[in-house]
Length: 115
Image (cartoon, rainbow, N blue to C red; front, side, top):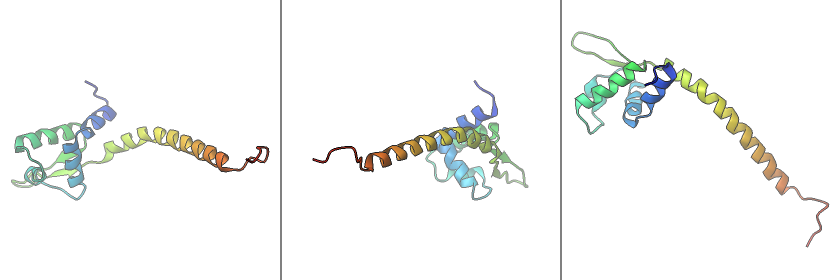
């Protein structure tokens, strides 16, 4: 199993439940019970998802009396954005080339005989 930060982050983001948990945490801290509400699964299952997110550094937990809120830690996502950036540039270049080609096809060719 890969242990580099990018691999841990991508593995954590691969699951839709974990992405849903992160989306909820982007609105503010929440307890495990609050995070579990929209999902049709046990608290234990949600806790396992949170542990994966914690291991990837995407979630932290603090302790305030009996409350242990979870908090989004978005910094590891910067590595993902940086990694994806090279592919964004690749696709932009390819789309620019396609756009230029389509414009070329639409430009009348004065050397071509008209029917």
